[in-house]
Structures are given as structure tokens and as C-alpha cells.
Image (cartoon, rainbow, N blue to C red; front, side, top):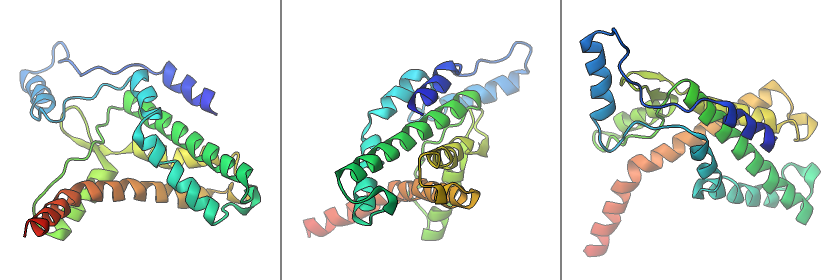
Length: 213
């Protein structure tokens, strides 16, 4: 599975920042340029094979694999793998393989259909407004012209990685309902991560003020 994921990513085109098309209207070209340069904190992302490889050895790779493997080991899930050392190794391999495939699918979609899924913190407003922003910024992504599009790359990661992982999972999980359930759980994980990005600076500030008093 790892070799297949690598092959998919190797074969995709490396996307560069869009240049104005010859013959395009001046306002349209100016809009693209403004959208890609307006926010220096979020420069246009270039998705390449190097990006893919870096993500495989990132802190995110560790946090997406080891804690979940420990939890599954404690709860003996799936129970067909057992609670011995071999069972833990299977869980580690399964989760990391799923992570690699998910990243490969995500980066491939981003290269073909440019999507910027980096979270932009709102940082103001009431709880409902900020939480709505978190949800919106999870299920949609920005294009190079500043418009919004469904975050197909994240959906490919969440649902596609679990769909492929069912090939080596116990037979009972090889169903459409299982893929829908655990894929949605993966999207929920993305949302929780963005929720932490939104509110953690506030919590950290409160803790500092409390410590100072």
C-alpha cells in the first residue's frame, strides 16, 4: 500500500502559483494577484513530492499514530489482533499506513485541484460565530483566487484512507457504513484540531494572567 501511495504522488504534477493567462482581462489578473499576495502570513502553497515526504516524518505523523495505537491496544480493538506485542505492532503499522495513504491522497488532490486547507484563526466574536468559522474552515478550502471550494483533499484523506485500510482490517469493517462512520470521525478530528487552533491562544492568555495574579 505504501508503494502504491508513493507511486500516485510521484506521478502527479507539481503545481506552481498561477500566472495570469494571456489574453485574460486585467481585472481578473489583478484579482488573482491580489488574492495570492494579500496575506503575507499565508503565501501560496506549492504541493510537491517533497511536501509529501516531509509530512511522513513530521510530528503530526507521530501524534496521528502512537496515541491511537495505545488506546486501541488498551481496548483490544480490533480484538482479532490480540493484546500482545504482535497486536500492538499491527496497530502501529495499520495506523501509520493509513496516515501515509491519507496524506498521499490529500496531497494528490491538492496538486490537481488547488486547495489551501490551512486554518485561519478568527480570534474575535462570540462562541457561536467562532465555532461556525471553525466548521466552515474545515469543510471548505481557499482557491488561489480567494474563492471557496469544498475541501475535497481532506475528505479524500479521511474517507479514502479508511476505505483502503479496510483491506487489511477484519472483514466486519469492510462495509460502506464502516467507511462512512470512520471517515466522518476523521473529518471530526480535523475539526477538533482547528477548534484547538482557534481557542488555545485565548486559554493560554487566561492561564498567563491567572499565573501573574
